Image (tube, rainbow, N blue to C red):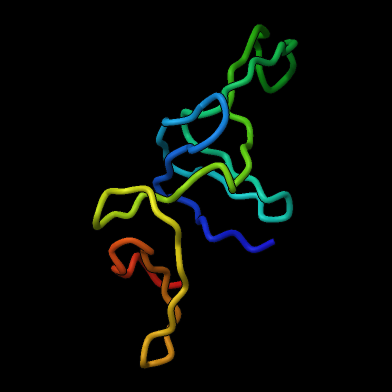
Length: 107
């Protein structure tokens, strides 16, 4: 499954317990169709002390959410939008905003 969302995109969560939150995409997992968004979908994990971490305890970290539950925020119109792929006259592929039609970046 090809994701239309890339690392460092600003996204808004549209479904689930974190609906309405915004954040930057840290990691994309295209095989699973999931992404990890900064500051969204925290889970707590009980960690024992080991060689890497001297202290144990309860660790909070972001977990993946489904890519279909987020929308990219267009940098031009600042609205959550779907992404379309366009081919320019010179043959170059770009990602564009469905609402305002502005080019976001190259593919």
